[in-house]
Amino acid sequence: MGAAWAREMLRMEIFFQVNDHNIIVAHYDRTLSQYPRCIVLDMWVADHIFRHQGDFWRARPMYQDVQ
Image 1: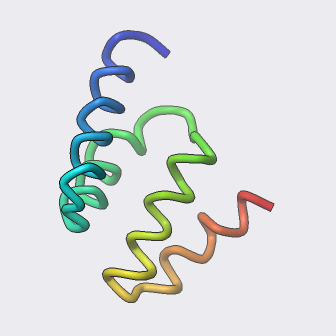
Image 2 (image 1 turned 90 degrees about the vertical axis):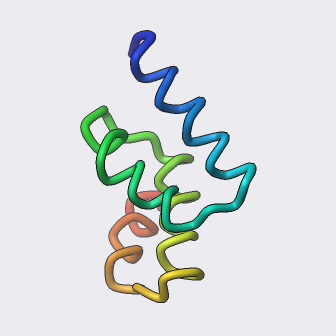
Image 3 (image 1 turned 180 degrees about the vertical axis):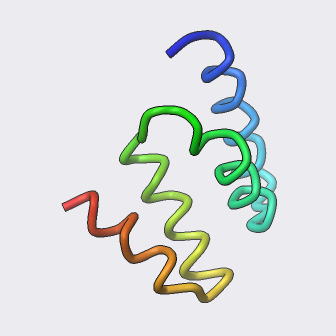
């Protein structure tokens, strides 16, 4: 995927380490959603959307794609 994708994934890892739920979802929406889907990343972000923002209906399709 290239250096740009790797850089954005590293930023996402930092956001996960500091446990900033809003920035995790915002970074995914703004940057990582432009790249091909990564099932593992989608599960992590869906978990944050559902557990911390309470938006089951937004997280549901992300969970369904993992099956």
